[in-house]
Image 1 (tube, one colour):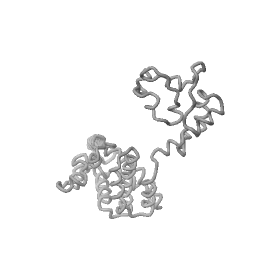
Image 2 (tube, rainbow, N blue to C red):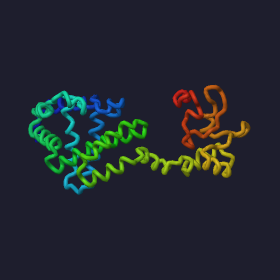
Image 3 (tube, one colour):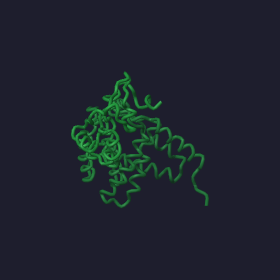
Length: 275
């Protein structure tokens, strides 16, 4: 059975969607950041929308995720305008979506209806989709905050009044105090955050350059290991980190304890040392 879709139109439309990978999220440029493309935003927002729909016990979480995936397609043609730009520019977003989907038949009409439902939040699914998009922005803001950009807090503060669901408000509360790196610290056995207390590191890296268990215990409490005598063989980690750019010995366990690399090798980056 042959589809009613014009395959040439599908090819053109899909190439057009690829341009979303090049379209930046302009609002972040106001605080001198460029953390994501529109496509990257849509992908994580769609995943979050699926989960948010489950949290709210919505009967069709797949619909919410699909709505989000298509909701920013117009930005290929009109761009991602932030609050400042919208004070001066009237964007023909509806017209752009209509033109984009016009050749896609019934599928295109469905895409246009989903786009409109999110834009107007006229349905429960549309409301959940919009909240997920907002919350994804909040996740990105939190990531920027922990990297030192305090201006990103404004994105979180202004998002709060726009969140309507109970699940969305709970997520917002958690995001605002979360450590974005908790997931990989848990996977790596590094949570709750004190690297030297990690049993995996204690079994592998620490024993290779400590003077036995007593020194290891001391190292874990002070976050520094006592200097290794020149006559004692070094383990694989500290042997690579032992020489600074000035040729001096440095036996601080930079990797195993989480101390900044610059403390151990002031002017040599990891890729320079690997050559």
